Length: 206
Image (cartoon, rainbow, N blue to C red; front, side, top):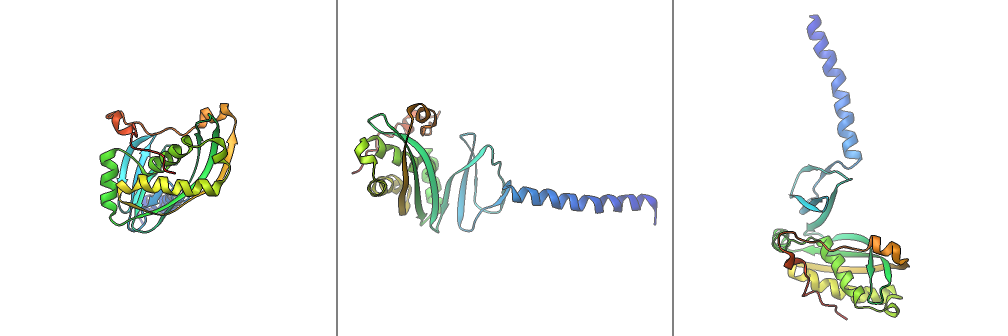
């Protein structure tokens, strides 16, 4: 066999395992991901919209990218942990979850795009609105807070054509003020239209 052909063959045989290893590495560390069936994903990079994925594989940087909206006709469970301040100026770290689904995923995506909101932002804002209206005595029971939160988040996701199936508060912890100020939840601010982020209609529900 010609020596040049042998060199090419050796290169290919050496390259294939390396390529397989690289692809395997990307899958293992979540850099290459696949959109679940009947699901639409909205991805932000460094707090700014990056892309919307409806099918197939996509590249995802775990360091800079965040899936801020996951819309599916199947129930979607999301777990959150954030810091909120009540009207007594006390900071609370709260673990909570929301489960929702959509009859028409495309309609939900369009409503989110029109309002420049994400599902993550909406469900966290619902908790912020609720906690801001509570005093310290109302923050002691996670079950009671969870019942109020369910009503609050249901009213705030309904305009986006999402159906709430569950909302639960798991854990509430008071944290020092200096830590709370640093970690406190910050609402998304739209640079193009600040009025969309004023949330004047986000009223507490009890």
